Length: 296
Image 1 (cartoon, helix red, strand yellow):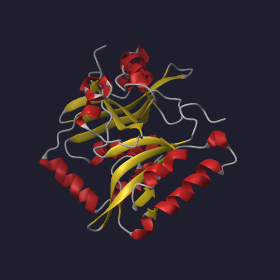
Image 2 (tube, rainbow, N blue to C red):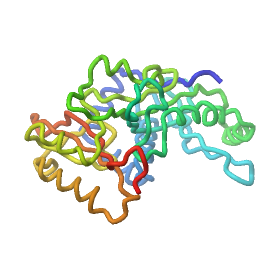
Image 3 (tube, rainbow, N blue to C red):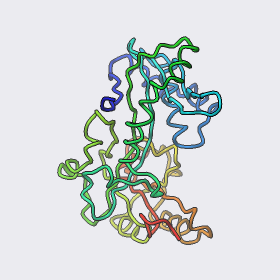
């Protein structure tokens, strides 16, 4: 099949107005998320897309989580079937957070690994290319779509979102040079896009966290998973912590946990005071000291 197309949605006035209204009154969206499977970050991400195609301008949701069976077992699933500006789409959704392996250039997708070391960018892209998108043309898929009175003429697109994190060093900065070193798969729409944060985005071993916290007195927040998707904004002092509080939380999480194999990474963000609250300015993925090896 052809290269994977990255989903592109025009940022027109109708979309801007809809998003602005939703931001001012998100109660309907929050109710939709609460009523659906939203506990995992991936499920939460899918809920957001489903809601957009249900209620967004120039969009229409045809079906989602389309499970295809041969009568004995489930063969696969398609995330989204939808209309966008009168064009039919089959859309695969993925939200990923990849960390650059030490001593690599970062140019190759294989240089980027998930925080639990179970996932790798090149493997994900290969699965999408070889399995998930070709599944649209499986005979059982064609049969199911006909039963649902849905055609099989879809533009296929990928909505791959997330962040790329480089290893923290004393002079870590997101420069033009570092942006040029992103893996090819994240630069070109033909294979989807991962976002490199417009601010600082690095990973760091827990044992080195003081190097970050000591830089200056600042406000910090450790994010819940559903807050990972975008730039974090805190409206009150109660939602941010001092460096000493964050250091205690990180130490307890990584060094007082009685089940090392269950120690997960933490998302730490530095917060800057702005009108009306605090806005994220830097982002750090804090991982156990043995990463990328599995904890013992």
